[in-house]
Length: 245
Image 1 (cartoon, rainbow, N blue to C red):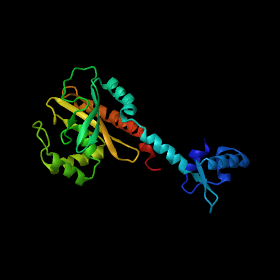
Image 2: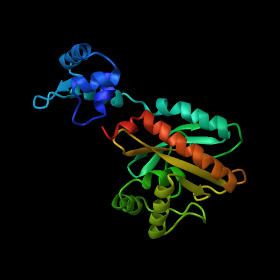
Image 3: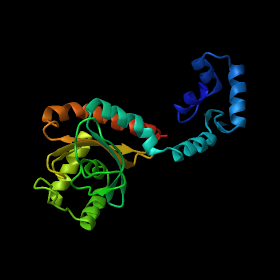
Image 4: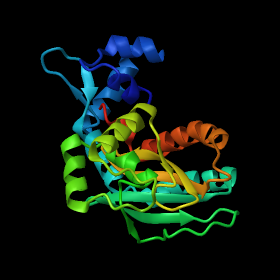
């Protein structure tokens, strides 16, 4: 088990002596272990260099793992953590055909009435979750969505011009989080972060929503660090850290 991650660190593979020296095993024991791993496809030996590298069996297994991942199940512990630490409404959404779809909602302990509910669709241009996702899509895709879906004015704070919205998305991508400052519902402020899958593709977003009176500038500043952490943790559970393999 020590050999497999060790071999993965070097693209060109490792020789028996290098492996033996790094795990403090004798060469004959290492060779026997490698032979078994090669037999089952977890390790391969390069015919030209005789070095050992990862085998395709590991890719097969990891692919099955990634296919079996349930976003809601993987995100749930982190959503509960957010709810516990903020006492505000927590949303988990996925991107679907130019809109966001709410797939989870935790109500928090504070009273807050919102239009959102599990299964409901929402516009992307005026929600923090929508912005968090759009910021990581190609600009042409964003413009296409805005053209098809329009930019309905939800409040007098909704961004109305495409050029202003594109500039907003650039700021979101730079900061790593998005804000909805009463752009979708009066009196409600939200902060959201994107969620990435094992291919590095943005697939979802998570947000904290609360009344503007509580979601002050100070509160949002505090939430930034927590939200960025949560976003990274959920993405990691979806295999985001495997994207470079």
